[in-house]
Amino acid sequence: MKIRWKTLLICIAIPLLVGLISGLISRGGMEIFETVSKPPLSPPGFLFPIVWTILYILMGISSYLVLSSGASKGEVANALSTYGIQLFFNFFWSIIFFNLELYTFAFVWLAALWIFILLTIIRFSKISKPAAYLMIPYILWVSFAGYLNLGIAILN
Image 1 (cartoon, rainbow, N blue to C red):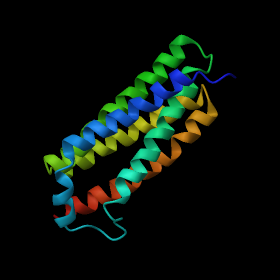
Image 2: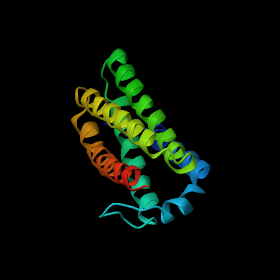
Image 3: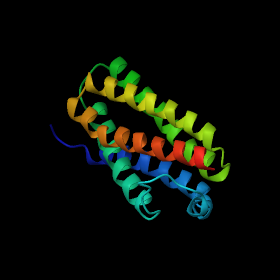
């Protein structure tokens, strides 16, 4: 399969832009995050943008594999629609958590995000196994984020 570089770069740029814009909107909340009580195993703040950048790149590659798979337009559209919904939930989670400091609601929102990531993985797996596998680090990180989010909701 020949790589369509322009399409690949656009697919990678989309989740990176979602993360960048959400991060810019919620960047002031990181100072508050440093002051709240956190559960054990909370990583240092500098680690979050590194991990998220890697995850967004993997997501972009994953969506490219689905888009360029040759599967039916309906299957691809269905899978990418679910992918788009999870990006929507991803975008707003940090704003709800960091800006609004609605920790319990953010946890519920994150649970919905987790469900849409799982649905995306399932739909991607029917089109491209590698695309589904590339989403696994993302759902694992969001699971860990759920632990942190719930811990912060309980402790604060």
